[in-house]
Amino acid sequence: MTETGDKIRLDLWLWYARFFKTRSLASKVCKARKVRINGEHSKKASTTITPGDVLTFPQGPHVRVVKVLACGERRGPATEAQALYEDLLPIEEQVKAKREEAKTAPALREAGSGRPTKAERRAIDKLMDR
Image 1 (tube, rainbow, N blue to C red):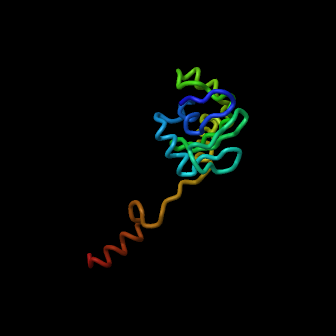
Image 2 (image 1 turned 30 degrees about the vertical axis):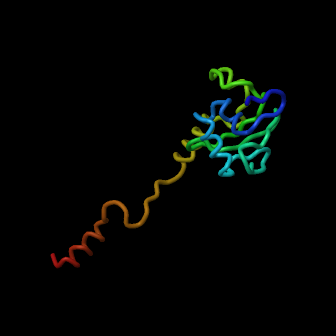
Image 3 (image 1 turned 135 degrees about the horizontal axis):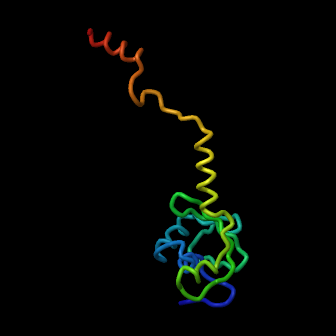
């Protein structure tokens, strides 16, 4: 079932590279058309990829952008899996950018949520005939 050489199935590579815990999870993401290969949506899990392709896919709350360096022959340890790809947009940078954005963005609250203001409390008291 393993493919050697310079081509490999997309779902198999995602599983080999340890982006997903099971191959069926990788396959579901591929079938949902959430994986892009060189900017184009992949239509199925059996799409073949080669070294040099750039993959973009969601992983939890983050978007991963990786460049395929090798196809791999098995699902090995994490160090072996990390040699299969180059992370073009590391998660650390995404987290740092979100923190910076949160610092500069003002705290907004939807109208009607939270405690009532003094004017709203007076209006409630007037409505309840207090």
